[in-house]
Length: 439
Ligand code: FES
Ligand code: FE
Image (cartoon, rainbow, N blue to C red; front, side, top):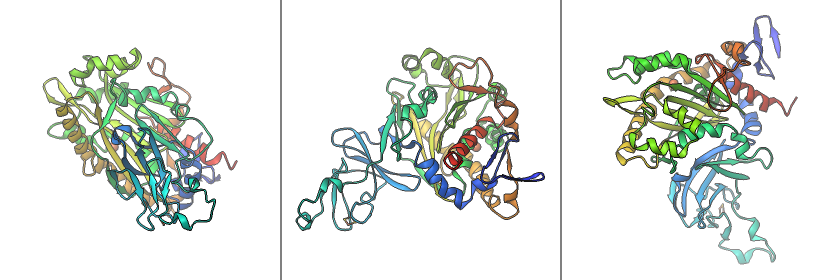
């Protein structure tokens, strides 16, 4: 790190823990982008999809893991497989759809074919290969480790490191609140929306994990000023009591509660199911929950957005899961799914799907407000003058070592809600992973 008076430029240690400063260059540098592939994305558990996207034998979706194209498939035996979408012969993509159903993958170049278990079935010219050729070594390359947590499928390219359960750790308690709060669990509502944004993946990740400050500036229009405000005045007032929670490994969630009737913002027909599926402490948190927003390190985020009163006493909100795929320095492809409880009525599922897309779809009002601002960050990260001056997260510093008592869930809870605490902890964790192998 060099310290040129007050003009601090952080390199190669990008974070100043004492001052709460973060190098701008990490949000756009091609060199950082390359390093992240090895030091973050090859070692982390990356979200691949939800089991309800591929319910039947042969169902397949294609995804990426930091650039590597991946097939996720329900195999003939009902288990789930994930493979590099690249023919073992010359590398052509053997699955060329976003979503479909198949009994085998047939390469369109020279015709090698593979089963849903990834094994090579035929090269078309097996007899030409030398005697003793071991065709069992010529299948699709499996994702090194594959696991799921309550329907959420994750892959990891590294043989070493924590199991998925260890990696998620106490954050599983919070995932349950959103994706496993009924006995049937969560169900994806249709395919993901996909769109490209000129922003670094970390800009999006820390926005969701959690930049609470921007909500009352960036989104003040739809939150309070639109003809049908998204948030009742009581909810805006409740922000003062909200908490941001860190469970380690860079994972965090912000929770906004609104005292009132138990489960007031959720459909009545699901209330008993919440009590059946959740631990009592979890159910108590969900009972007053108005907004939840989160990032699971590195690039998975979700939000259950502000409740809207659709008729007196009846509220509705949408649950979205997003993934920020880095595709180039300062550029991401966003995948955005909508979810609802399996047991919810068809009408409710349709209503929350529409609500979620209207808010956070490609043209959604909140999405547009965020994306426009994120895109403008990129032009001031690696340019000659701007890169000399770090970004400021200093509001985190006074609170980092002072979690507040009394929070019902695991992890460390922090206030005030608008301090940049869990964002900075995310970046500290990023810095640890990026620098520990070179220190
Ligand atoms: Fe797939 Fe040749 S590249 S069969
Ligand atoms: Fe936003």
